[in-house]
Image 1 (tube, rainbow, N blue to C red):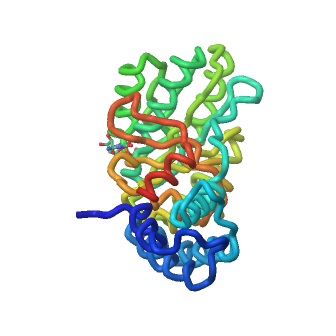
Image 2: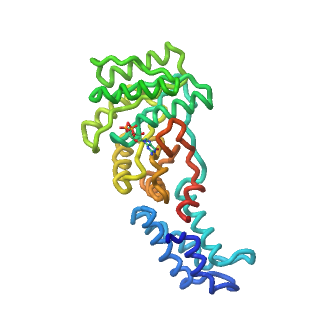
Image 3: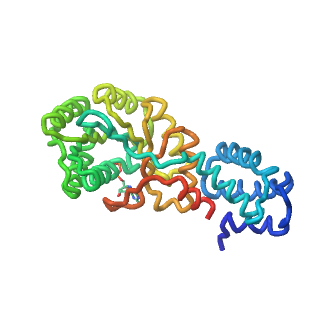
Length: 296
Ligand code: GDP
């Protein structure tokens, strides 16, 4: 039976009640449990090492207040440190620019990019009463364009009519014009994905970025792909300088460890998380909740 990190830490410290401050030996025992729990939660080794070191520094010598046990005290330090690595506040999509505000969605094929595009459109329409236009730039996969059209229809948002002879850049230009003339508040461009990062994809996406001048570049990554997702995020971010990350399939990622690695590796805020296939399965990212999940 799986035992939560909070419980395990509690046990280690059970015998230590009544001490005034945590000493190095107490803390080292706790660190082993924390390291193991983070690795089980799929946090990358590099991040685990840095994290454990930070917690150790804060924990050794920390005063144990009367109202809590030493175990609770360490759990709190770990929690606060997790939140600080994850980014302290939920950061939402920034629409503070001239209309149509352009959002560029990038990521690998299968990461959930098209689904997330439609989910974001639905959220902006329902919650912020925005008039949204969607456009797919995936000229290599007509099925992907059709998928976006169908999802757009499902959530009640317009999609740019499909013209199969255009290049991605031409579609981006037409979308911008249509966005402006049609009085849209937000334009979301869904770019082509690949099964892996390659130079052609990066060059194409960089060109689209220079033409479309998006206000947000949202990198969509699949939480279930673990270490791979982190490498992918780094490559995309180095080339395109993303403004935020959307992590999908967090519903399947029981422990939330991928989010911690992602934030630490890219330094970019996770803005939203996908928690299912349905169109409303999109949530704001709350660092504190993910920290709770990692602690169990
Ligand atoms: P794309 O190739 O990156 O555009 O990926 P899609 O948007 O087509 O998504 C691929 C599959 O992942 C689809 O079956 C989606 O329903 C599914 N999917 C996307 N986001 C989520 C999520 O947050 N949770 C779950 N469980 N499935 C998701």
